[in-house]
Length: 104
Image (cartoon, rainbow, N blue to C red; front, top):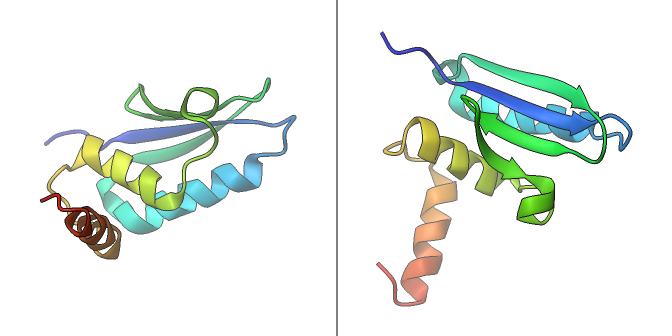
């Protein structure tokens, strides 16, 4: 059996981003449930806010220009752990938007 993914959220305690990190962890746990092995909150400093899946950086606040929205975060996590998974309304909205612009 394959080991379940570990997600880490490194957040800045000086910036008071614990609630944001906790909310994102909750969103991921609610969406992916027992498909995840762990979602860990890691306190840090210096304005850091990073999200990793199995040690691979999928979001970095400074690099990516802010914080992810729940839709983008869930899509990035899904793409890493289960690319064929349908995220329901999140994916349907993205498909509708691309189809309205003439993209498949």
